Image (cartoon, rainbow, N blue to C red):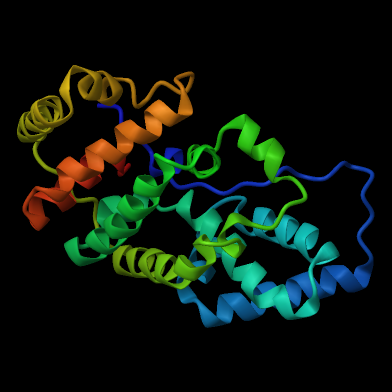
Length: 245
């Protein structure tokens, strides 16, 4: 069964610079020192940097770009914001293994962001990581440093950290296939009953990367609202089924 990667909802990659860019040695040292400090303060980000291919390289490059224009006092916040965004693209497997409380904490953050994205095309594009969002993001502050999202950055990082740490060295948790299909059919039926034929159509097209971003964000918001109606243990299993891998 195909899974809906959480990366499609909550991702954060900026465009890389032209090959001709030259980075002074001092800037490289500054970036490395800040990343080392962030890793020491946040063990979950350290785990991802060690375990996820390309995570640290992307973190280093995005932070380098930001520190070219950012004041020194912003270095810590920028490092955390960038790493948190990258972590959202790297937690699929952790979602599949973490316990129910950690999965629930992540769900609270996902639901909050996707509800806002239904009325915010820019945020919607960022969460879906559309090509236009990647182009627009070049040279701008990380979205988790901008209002109003910076106010929730600590809570988002806490949820990501709890998920990553809790999942460490645990096996994948999933429902038996037939039982999983039955529960997912019930979710589809509830979406149809609550949001009508249009809602069901949005649900069925959630994996269509060529679909209109706002329709996909609304469909994800509606899915999260139906999942919020479920008992916590079942909700956690359904989140693993939809988004874990």
